[in-house]
Image (cartoon, rainbow, N blue to C red; front, side, top):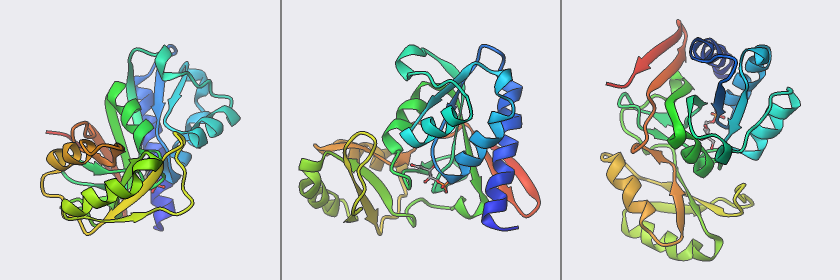
Length: 224
Ligand code: 5RP
């Protein structure tokens, strides 16, 4: 199976999982990325079974609308059950690195409102320790160099993501050479740096369920 086939398989499994928890009045939270794109495409076939979506990026909003799925402003939605999103890395503790697609801040906000975070990945994303994938940090443009110097003090090696402006008008530093043994602690420490909007460690709001595609199908992992 190619990685793409696994992404498609896990996206279809996520639609089945979501439909078990949704009804005609439900809003579904939708993440961002190539795995989520498969999820959106598969969800479109079932759009009569739920009310609409809240979205974590302009790209996902556009794709949802193209399929005729109504997209609601998160400010209009006080709570919803399921948020489905991919990840760049995930551990058995359901801690993740996200933000490869630069949508980390909106993803973290939508995830905060959702009752259940369903992470959909292929098995290449499952790691024992976070940090091999460079950690994305969204930064106010004026603060870029200052934040980079502060991250060096924390032991990271920040690289400016050239040509990338987030949906919020900010820039991304990708932090290399981190071995993230205490994800919640580092998530908080980086977020305390003035000028950081947020970073791509999702440990304080980890996933509740992970659907992982491998050669044998799709496995479901639950948080302890
Ligand atoms: C976007 C993300 C994505 O979920 C993450 O990058 C995984 O993407 P893909 O499904 O394309 O591998 O966090 O900001």
